[in-house]
Image (tube, rainbow, N blue to C red; front, side, top):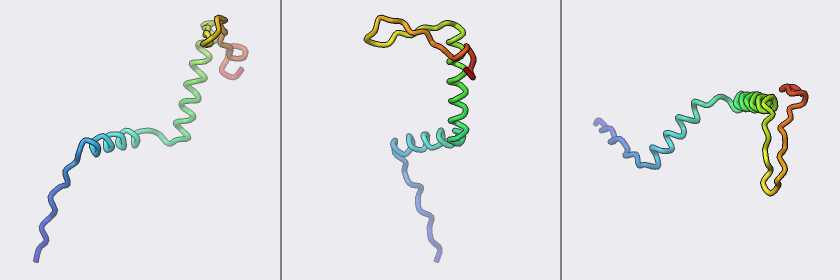
Length: 76
C-alpha cells in the first residue's frame, strides 16, 4: 500500500507577503551588529552636518539651532 503525496498547499497573498518579509529579515545582520552599524552611520552623518554648520529649526520656534558635535569630531 503506497501513500500518494499530498498536493502542494496553495499560497495566498498573505503567505507570499510574509515569505517575502521573512526572506528580507534573514538577510539582515545580527541585532548587535545592526546596532553598531546604525550607531556608526549616525555618528558620521552628525559629524558631517556639524562640519557643514548645518542648522535645524525646532517646530513651534523661530530660532535656528546649530548642530554641534563636540569639537566637530565624532568623539567630541
